[in-house]
Length: 402
Ligand code: KDG
Ligand code: MG
Image (cartoon, rainbow, N blue to C red):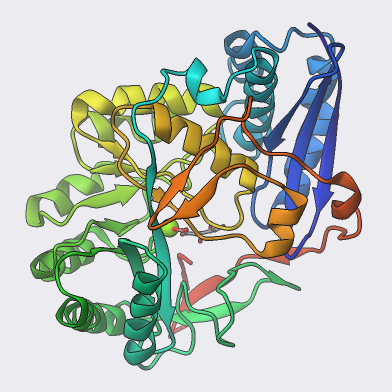
């Protein structure tokens, strides 16, 4: 079998997505997600200008060799743009291979290790009362693991909270919006929020929280310690992960489980974190981590260190990435949890898919390949719209991590 063509499809059915469609001489096609929130067109150019020309004529079954060709074969390696482009190709090739063999992807990567995939959802509110109520609403929808985010008293905007009461979506059209951040206000408030949630709903539900890279290591250590009585499933991204060694300090002070890695691109971003057991969950995304080939290796490497997976699953990852994650989650042994931020109905229409949610879990189906399609005609009615993630500053104007 030979690859005959690859099309980079860009559309904005409620938000921007970049999708790669790889075509073969056998009539089988494969899909890959190449979306990088706020930097979509950089991946489009990288694919169209540099990778697709080298892809034509290759055998789609050679997933390992093709991955190495684009990663190792390129002098310039790593980074989110490069790895999202390689990730899209890798997903599409696995999709083709599994379709050609008439098997759902998980059968090619270890077979079924579990019947369903535990997910966590996002509950949030502009203040404590709204956030606590939203947790209740998600429990009613069947979720058993819930990430809780809330507006912070004294701050106009906070990560994870929509200002207008609609579903939270961080990217916005126009130039990047600026928001003010105060670590002091956040640290003083968060334990109160978690106490209220536990007091209201008891111990049977798993609670998670995303600090979204805002703290220093010693601040993260304080927060982890103060959250210990509420037994979080995890505290996510307490500090930016560039300095892996900083997690040694956090670990010394708290037993709150830690999750990291949604912005990582290769195993080299987390080798110290894994081998020194400095985190409990690795969150690297299938698309931004370079595809199914490296994510499988990462999961297998994490297993002996007792690190489980908790793959990133925000709405800026298309249903193609979510399906790929679900196949991996179904097959590996050290699965932990999967993030589930449901897409808008229009996104589900553009990407008809087989996976489904029921009572707090996602189920992957038996359709050959990834089990996701792409409605090009419908997508073409929603052209790309420039959008950015926000940026954050401290009260004195200092740029901070968003
Ligand atoms: O594009 C950025 C989002 O994917 C990110 O802000 C979402 O932190 C996030 C999460 O945990 O889902
Ligand atoms: Mg996050």
